[in-house]
Image (tube, rainbow, N blue to C red; front, side, top):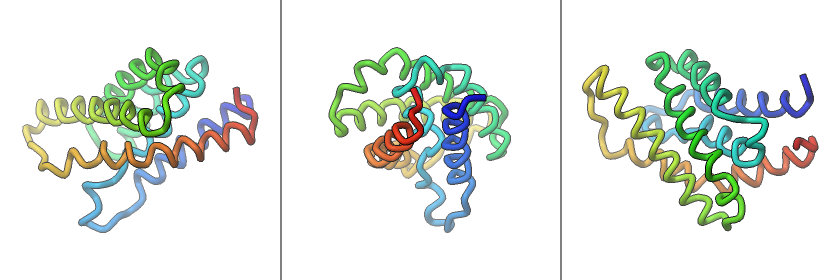
Length: 158
């Protein structure tokens, strides 16, 4: 396994750890979609190395780690990864604020898919704070992009 692949896997593992990190009860509904954001970075930066299959596998692992319905995150990450691959050339040339808007749309799509699955299986409608999570992710995007770009350049991943 190449060093580049190990770095990509390591960053996704860190994102999964951040997803599982305990938070106060009041902050739980506002937990950023760390795994989605990191996966989107790698898809946009290296679409030839990280694709829909990666999104599916990461989603299954995330389902197991978080205890959600098996396949829920896999569906969302696969769809969002597919869309990001189709749009990666356009997203990369935008300034950060426009990239954040594109990322916001992808995060909303993932949230809509999760809401659809949750509604179909449990019938529970979340509150308005459910929609704050994609907004928080979009606000974090420039920081995540710069950090992961530095990691990618440091380890010369291409």
